[in-house]
Amino acid sequence: MNTKFLMMASALLMGIAGIALTFLPVEIANYASLTPTDLSSLLFQILGALYFAFAILNWMAKANLIGGIYSKPVAMGNFAHFFIAGIAIIKSAFANQDVILLWIGGIIYALFAIMFAIAAFGNPLKND
Image (cartoon, rainbow, N blue to C red; front, side):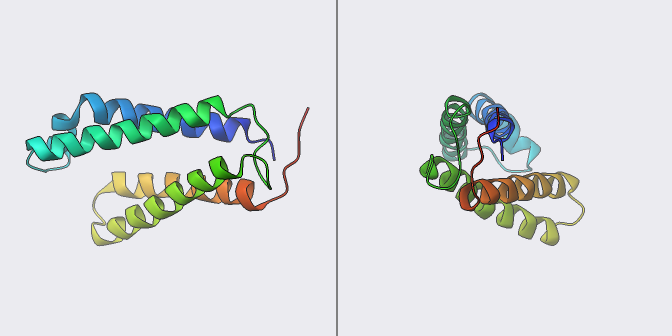
C-alpha cells in the first residue's frame, strides 16, 4: 500500500483542525453550544497544538515507507488516534442523531482508522 496519499490527507485534515482550534477557540465553543471560558479556550488551543503537531509529523513522514516494521510508531500513533477518537465520535453521533456533523466526522475518522490499521498491521509495499 502506498501511504503517501494517506499521510498527506491526514496531515491536511489535522492541520486544518489544529489551526482552527488554535486561533478560533471561542468561535468553535460557541458553534458547539458551549459556554466559552478561559479554561475551555486554553484546552481547545492545547488540542489545536496537538493536532497541528501530528499534522507536521504526518507531512514530514509522507515520503517514508510506512507499515510493518517501517515507521511503526507513526502508523500506530495515527491508528490509535483515529480509532479511539472515531469510536468516541460515532458513540456521540448515536446519542445525538440529529447532528449531521458528528456522523460526517465519525465516518471520516473510521475511514482513516481502517486505512492506518491496514498500514500498521499490513505488509508494506514500495510503489515506484
